[in-house]
Image (cartoon, rainbow, N blue to C red):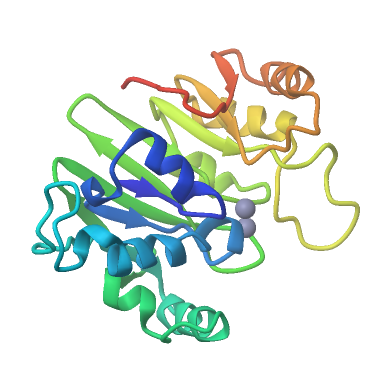
Length: 232
Ligand SMILES: [Zn+2]
Ligand SMILES: [Zn+2]
């Protein structure tokens, strides 16, 4: 399962897995940094040499996989616009994936994993995602401003991935992101077992960000890093 597929993700995915082994992709919201690489992913599923009727790497071209793609309501129309605007068939993504639009109240079963959603405050319809398996549960906040509902949704989670986008809160208007300190406050309110800060620029001092979060949350705090592995 791949959770969000923003710019750059498809190349990184290929470093750790063959993309044909992805059964399902879940997208939290329709901001480019969370879905743009559905386009090259769809291109690989559609045009890669291994799917052509010539022998490539022992693959015959048969059995092209069609992973499930779970996207927020309204995303199919948005994806058609993106593909058409990029000079591709409008249904480029829908042809490559079995697309289903979810609602916040939906619950999914994907293999041995159970998936739940919760709306969070952001600039477009955005969903926190909980993934639970036999040995534990992780909660991914996606992008969001301060939210007691997110803390409630994540209550008691084993692994909480929260964004820590901002060096300081947005000065005015609608809140749509958190500071590292606010991420720590949310983890404390959720009584999470551990916190991982995500969606953070490497132009920030990551040690400072970790310390800010740790000042508000007494559990273990890490800053997400490429290739990091967390066991539940
Ligand atoms: Zn966003
Ligand atoms: Zn984002």
